[in-house]
Amino acid sequence: MRAYAEVTRDVAALVAAVRTEDLALPTPCAGWTVRQLLGHMVWENLMATSIAEGTPRTDHTADHLGDDHRAAFADSVDAARTAFTGSGMLHRTYGPYEAPGAMIVQQVVVELLAHGWDLARATGAPTGLAPETAAETLAAARRIYGAAPRTEGSSFAPERPAPPGASATDRLAAFLGRDPA
Image (cartoon, rainbow, N blue to C red; front, side, top):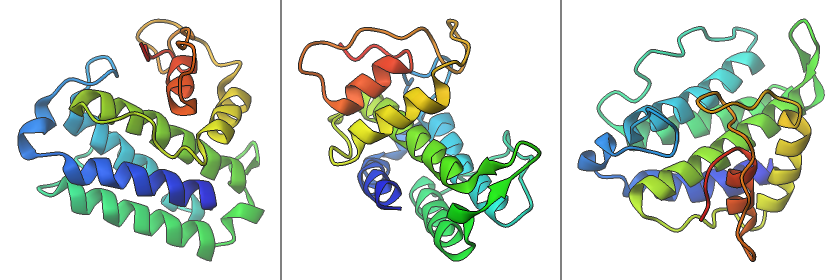
């Protein structure tokens, strides 16, 4: 939960700085605007919450932001935090493959940190998010997604090199196929 708290702290600050006119900006996620990226981030929190509650969502393409992207993100973080700590999720398994709840939470942390990096790049903010957690999140991403198919335009593009001295968040972005240069 520490990693989730640290990542959402830094990403929430980025989300709070997004102006209405920024919502149409392109992001490093091919074909996504800032609004679409934020909607996906909110959905990730809501999906994890719904898994913890035993009713996985199927509304990935719905509008999860409404008229207030800041409130939508904050509310989704609060719901996920409550689900993670109040449902016993970290100590249970889910689905036909019995995925550990702790791994689902790790996946959400990876998603939010990677997409937080995307948001920072899109809005011109610094990308060194959650420095206390970024290195362990990169290690988790390597475990979770290391064998995932990597093609241009898919969820994970081929890994890119990170420049010397890159932050762990920039190295995570490079691992997931973004260009941190």
